[in-house]
Length: 194
Image (cartoon, rainbow, N blue to C red; front, top):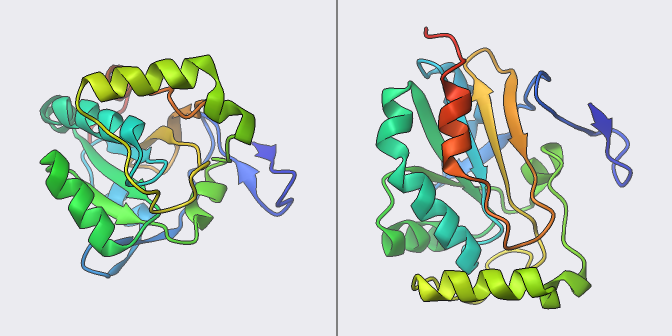
């Protein structure tokens, strides 16, 4: 594990480390411990952090994860999307995209910090790669909306075994980088069944 310099009491989990347990809010406002999400699965949990609910890249990412959900479920892996807005924004995001996966909130972004997900610098907003990603997302119909969380928050994707061990971790460096959903599926195949 790597220490976070802004928060020396926190560490960044990598593959092979124990996943941080934390509390998130379900859309109905109920508080959920993350460990209950992975420990109740046959093989593990795909934990997908969104930048914010207005992010076009997150819409694109959530739809890609959704398109592989049946395969993940057949592989014994549940999916949980984490955002940093309100319950109403989470529900609107889920409805807009026709998602079947559960969406949870981390309004103060403490869970993002626990998983080592930082913020992009202001200069990355005008990065040609981010601009090209914006065009890509817009061409698929994913348009930006007002930020429901921190506009520079970065996303991430983790596969956690039902034993609570991180199997894989993806922390993109730019806002437009979307970790492939296929990576979660490939990594899931090495997890033991219940």
